[in-house]
Length: 212
Image 1: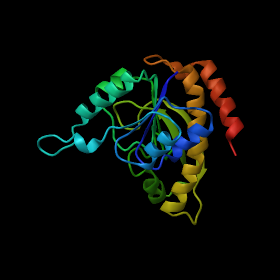
Image 2: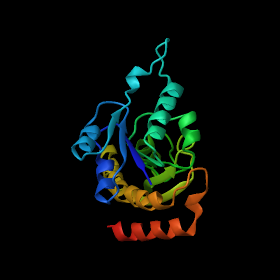
Image 3: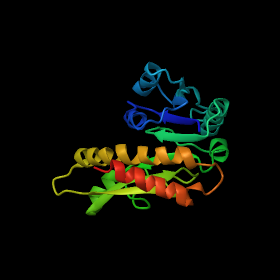
Image 4: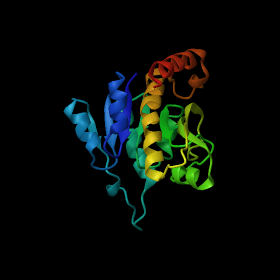
């Protein structure tokens, strides 16, 4: 199965995935970033699809046009599974249809609690005792797709935004690659592959092997 990893920053999630033996066929970024350089240094195809070039006549971001261009890049590279690894552009339209059930993302809360951009801040502000990280499928509604895996993170009395975010990231960097390892063997677009016993069993084995 040919995997694409989409990045916007330093590529730490991508590096964690690489360390688990998953080599992407393509690394794509929506802006210039370290993640592209990491891919190039490892001989992985790296593509910049710069979102700055997709602004409409009135100055707004042309999300549908960007998503169309992204779909063309992914299909042109024969991609089967798309892994969002800190990708900073919300996708819509044709790319979601083309890769329905085959786009993975991670979120710093135990969804459905605290969807959206400010999940860690909201967890601290509401005083919950436990938050965590969720790996899910991408659907048109933000952070609303089927949940593939979750891991709790207990909030400590001394936590601030930075410390809590760092501890969530440390969990994310072993949980998300565990899902990717299993998904690359089981994901079939436009099917409910994540409900298959084979995927669930393999995912549990990967999680148990890598949980600290």
